[in-house]
Length: 126
Image 1 (cartoon, rainbow, N blue to C red):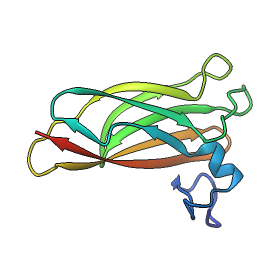
Image 2 (tube, helix red, strand yellow):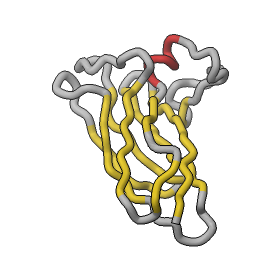
Image 3 (tube, helix red, strand yellow):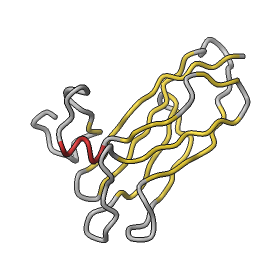
Image 4 (cartoon, rainbow, N blue to C red):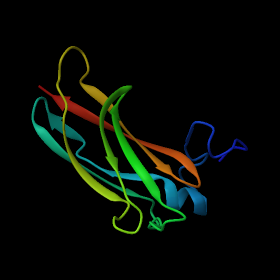
């Protein structure tokens, strides 16, 4: 990660092939199909970190946001102690226009370490 502070924008790994311990605990891990059918719901599961993130009062994940490109799709709020930093949502991607390939973006916020972002390309068949 660069020298910027955790709370300066969305954090992404500097070297995705060689994650730091902090990146391993904070990067959203996206499990979604590579291809979906336009207009049909599909499941997206996200867990925060390759290494499970704490969900304690003092250190926890507050929420996860789901986007396609810049378009907001959903937010899941989490509660420390009573939830795990893992969610599954059903999304629908419409294949209007020339957007056959889209970028699913997941942004999560840790109360101590700021926002972290991961992406996955998904093809939309009509």
